Length: 316
Length: 124
Image (cartoon, rainbow over all chains, first blue to last red; front, top):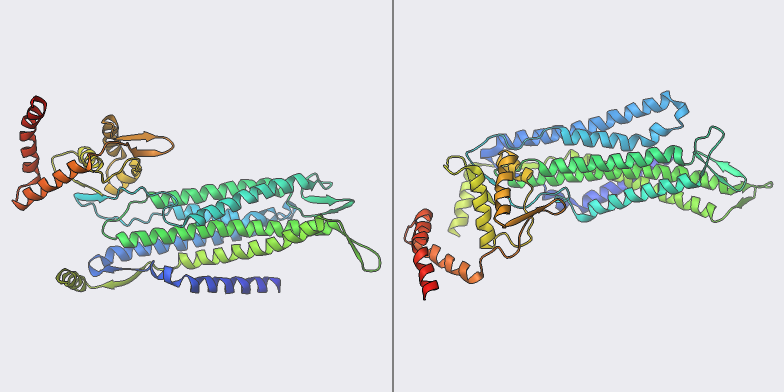
């Protein structure tokens, strides 16, 4: 039931975001003259192949990590917790390494732009700063959770003790250290993918299409990496909040409870924040899938029409 | 924007160097403006990175650009010619273009007149 509500909310928010951004999305669908149709279509196909390949790699990685989780119950859900981040990192590597060459010919006269292309050139500043801040927050949270964790009899830091009550699983060092490593790995994979996008050869012939593809690809990379980050950090917050609440609340005879404050309030905050962050993660991953399957090549207009247009522009 | 033409006798590194130098002196590339990385320029022009590196090294030796690890390759300040000289050059170029004079011939005319102008200005 909870999952159904979650998916409905994700569906609702994604719908609102897509309707709200339809104008900016429409700008990313470009037209090319008929004379360059074959090359442009080949390029668009290679882009689609890369994006679908990325999504397939993510799906395979998720499936494989779920199998590992089922095969290793003694790992206490660690593969499942890391699954979104690991799958996204693998997907980003596939995305970065799959070739999509827009430039196929080599004329004797070639031009280049003198504007440097950087990893952040094709997206808004907040689109990069927000995930960066979120990644720093995740690392900080993992350290704080590690410091507040207690070791159950097996010695792994995956419980929290408040007063005399101990509850788990709690994202202590047992989950926290891999979490920090995963966040660094995801950031590195994101930077690598963005770097490959920026450094790919620019097409003189299909300047507009080239830009649209880079903008769309940057959106896919940032939404996928941020979505994965929010998904696993949301799950970690939920687990932490649940354990903190359980450790802070004592059930007394007669159906009453006694809560140790501020731990109980903090646990509730973690639960609410976890729900919001996980929702945001689901929304971003869904948006990345939608953007990855968006075709940047729209209409193709006949060469004659383009000549006529050019002629009419000259006359006017 | 810079363009290389493989049909020209001038080697690609010299074409890159001269076009960048012209744009810096003409003020199209302003002081402290960041230039694309050697790799980006080489990828877009479909030439070896070493060719762009050679052009950048020559520009750096001429004091037109500076390269540092942190801030990349940037145009050095005070390398552009002044507005008045640029305006004179524009008028000269427009006049010769109207008469159908080619760029090479226009530059030859300037070179031919230059020593006399130097003598006149220094000798009074």
